[in-house]
Image 1 (cartoon, rainbow, N blue to C red):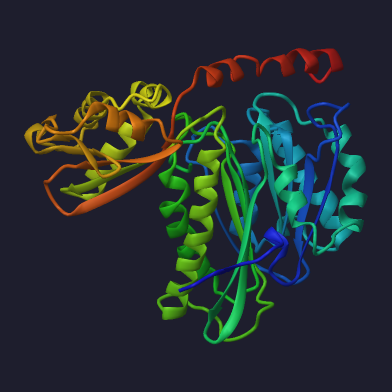
Image 2 (image 1 turned 90 degrees about the vertical axis):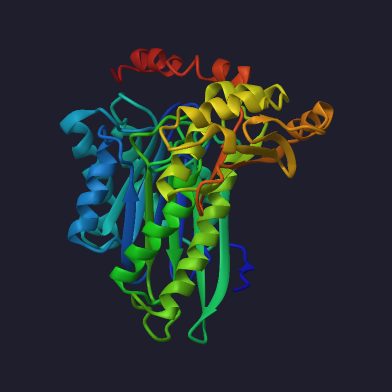
Length: 416
């Protein structure tokens, strides 16, 4: 089904408002947006997926609890501080963030989701957040979607947002979304935050199914550095403003909504990889003809997360030997003599051996591109899986050596 891209991001669907401010959460001298509120004028059906890391940030725990007990219609989020590994105080701070805007909006605290992203282990500077509750609520507008995408950025170099319109059951509906993420990105669930809004009239069961499957097709198919965050969250809000027949689970309408949502999230997932911390390459790793889907996934993830493979990509080196060695330790059943490896459509390895007739310079030309595909054909079955990955650069290491400079600043300010 064709999708028309429209402007507005998370505020493109009818009835969604947003506001953002600069609270100086990480740096009081900075004027960058770092605190945002997204809100639906109407009650919503809501769904979410969260990090599977056993160390979960306070806002993750609070949002999970709110989602279990209520339908979320608003999200307050901050960047600059993850509010992770902050104990009971961190949970109370996350609850307070929800409460302070809920009271001014005239809704229950559990109708507000909470998200944070940034440095782990430092207390959230609530003294910088509390004074902005009134402003966040009073400046809510339907054209502030782009601000939400900017306010949740950390090491991102650019905001990432999308909105589309499509037709379901003869009624036009809109889906908007924004995402942040550039580092600590690994499947399960691909640090990243994603907010999805729609004016579709959809049941909770259908939305749960669609979001879970769309995340599996998108954010669980990317990796940058092999690290899984404590804060990963995807929240979807549907306010039914578009009207029309309700979309229910098990119907053609539900499948159409799933396809549209998957389109939106995959677009954003790929943008996360392209904007990875100091990456220079976007590489698609496609595994074909494995015995089972899990086998295909094991092989794709092993290759996509291998530091040796990723380093070779950075050096424009089409080193298929590093690829096949990662295939071998993936723990998936393979037969070395059946493995074929291609760079784009050019064979590098056939039957586990160097491909005869392929010029190394031609492979190098492909590996030097900013985007290319590696296809690994196991020739054992009919199952496929694709992962979107990036290279590993010296600049990535330099960039991630300096995070603790913020701890020194926090000590000076008396935060810790």
